[in-house]
Length: 139
Image (cartoon, rainbow, N blue to C red; front, side):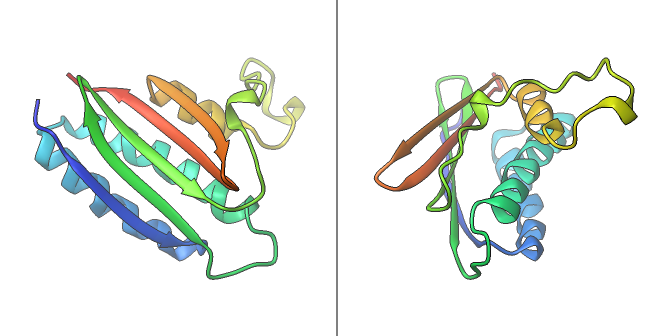
């Protein structure tokens, strides 16, 4: 498998999400990933970034979100780092998707989606930063 190491810096603005598709597209091309895998990676990353944009920095603009991508063995790791409010999505109880939509609590589906699309999700809070790593086995 090819080794890649690249990064993207975003601001906590919802319009920045449009930068994710070309970023993931380039990675997919480089690693020769099937279109469905690229689509799923982009979807998971969009969910994670939109959660940071919407919830990590209440009332603050111009805050950085750093996305690093690299391969490790047969996996692609996408690491998102922000200095917003500490939040561990790995501790969120999985959404009960068996309930009818009107009985489900609001929220939690994005994290459920990320967990279902990725092989693994890791979180740590270190030196005042949220560090979320999304792992996808690709080879």
